[in-house]
Length: 250
Ligand code: PEP
Image (cartoon, rainbow, N blue to C red; front, side, top):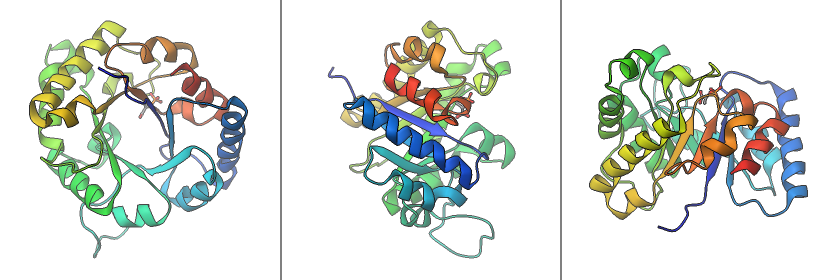
């Protein structure tokens, strides 16, 4: 199989005010100095920064994404943001079903599927997050849990939009702990099999990102793991120099 173009995505979560935009400017400089970079680079700042982040990223390879969207195209949903609003603010991608959304906001896989449909309808590229808890891994049910999340969180049709899944074991997020590369390879192979069985060639070309405590020191090893086509990076995406090291490692 030909090598898929890796995606290195940064998830800023609820971090950053206007001053954080300097990190985008810095990353732009680092990327320009480096010249040819194989990976696609994405930063998902808080919604309040989207528009300004997109302006800062202009005429660079950096793309901008949202961290969530509502399943409806509009309406009486105070505090929520629709997919087309993200697009209008300059986003190309949107993270959906992050474990923090699933835990903090009771997002089920059914809700994530509806949000994914909304993102696709608006012309955004969804990045759908899945991953087991530590208790589920210890109980030996990680494959089953992730399989169910993939089954339910993905709609049946993506059209021409690439399928992007981020495997983020909940116990590895923000903890400094990571699965072994063998465990990552096994889970990614499992996900690939499910996606190929359901989507055929679109499953073969789906990007399978790993997320959970990716940092400059472990990025190369993780990104070299079979069936890993990129990373979703939280903490280490906040500083441009750290994030750049991870981009280069891909
Ligand atoms: C995340 O929450 O998407 C994530 C990967 O976080 P961290 O890199 O900080 O573990």
